[in-house]
Length: 344
Image 1: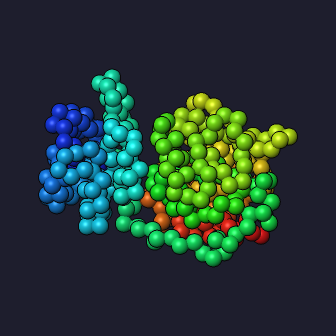
Image 2: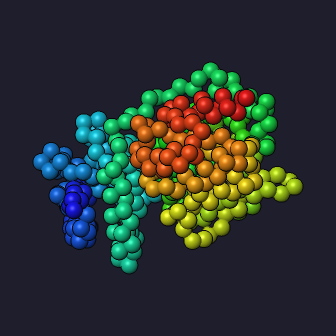
Image 3: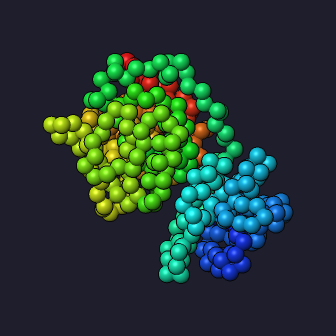
């Protein structure tokens, strides 16, 4: 029986107490080896060369050089999977934009530390499988996207559903920023905790042509509007005589997650049938694969992100393997394909 290699991790945090406590807790996991502890990015750079870690656990708020500046300098020279740890919700997305694979909120009390460690261990192990060398091109929308008129496509009757996990925040942003305003209603599940889903939706609303917001229970689905599933709430597509709307309810995890992509996709398959497009992006595990197959079976057009452009080729791989994907594409080709399909 082969012995599984431990994930080598380097911790970078300016708090002596926090990094020592964190190192002791992580070292108890049989799958992780803490190879170094650095108090600032300058110390960390030397340790990266010396210990060649598999993953970096990086604090965002540090003196001398903050974590985001360090990421911008680090990634072009040493593309490493990085999980950022932050006590501020606001700068997490800047860190992801600078190349971090995932993030985790620092615990606000000692009672929450154990749950923080358990979640961090999972994120470190997922990050160790992530691909960080792929750099998406600066995407310039094709002329057919810029001139796309959704009015021809009967957009009020069509639904676009998107699901993603690890690496998904940047993948979704790149798609949203390339799309025109005249599109059918879009529903998104991105695996993310409460508060962050709202902040992420607000960020997308500022950068894209579309109206993006965190979904509220009972909210209408309208053309040109994007609704993001709230953290810890399953989002389903519903239909009444007045049209489509969403249900957002707390519930048990489905396919390991709440919100779950499978829950969304299954509801879209049931309510929108062949008047739908399903898109499954980067992420670990299989959430969304069965739901995407359900959508395709009901006549929807389904797109899966390809291996090369995925940070983690997990969810789209399972979907492709079980026959859920109508077309597999690189991240930068998905907006074009979506608009061309809708124009037909």
